[in-house]
Length: 276
Figure (cartoon, rainbow, N blue to C red):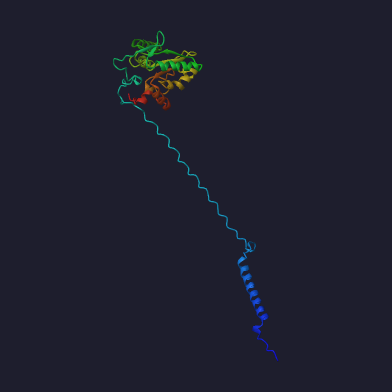
């Protein structure tokens, strides 16, 4: 009896081969897909791209500070009085000169310096301190004249008139010249009790030679600190009516003395009393 041959698709070996082939193809596809996902680009394969260096930000230039404007020069202080008015309301600023005599009925309390000299007791402490400090610096100040009564001033004035007469001047001219060196009675600051004549004991001459003496140099530079001024500076005779006296100091108070010294003016200019 002849055996009938089975069709190929019923052969188990053939079916197994097909199944194995499908598995292999699926595995290959899976690995291919997986490999594509896992592969990362190699950085070394990329071209080097240099980022541009940012330009430095320029530092802002400092704004120059404006130059401070100088303080304006202060105008002369005239206190509570006006030009032409006698300043007898302020004891340390009473103006006495050839055009402004002592106030009527003027009197003053004098503090003695020794048996023959004295000053207004209100300026005495500052005068004493100035003299003490001057001596402490090694100088030799000496007060040769201070407060004068009317009679004392008259005596000094008459003596100066006689000196000019002895030089050959007539009465009127001798009196005119004397009035420039010694105040007419009633117009002398010495009668106020606020003025002192101070010399260096190494020079007893009351003339311009006092200017170069060490004592006077110290007083001229420092008297304002104690409220005193050099009352008759050089070149101010037309304003003060008195010749240059580098020995005559007048008390006006510390604040006023400081301004007069710093501005290089006279008491008349400070008070606005230059008209005469």
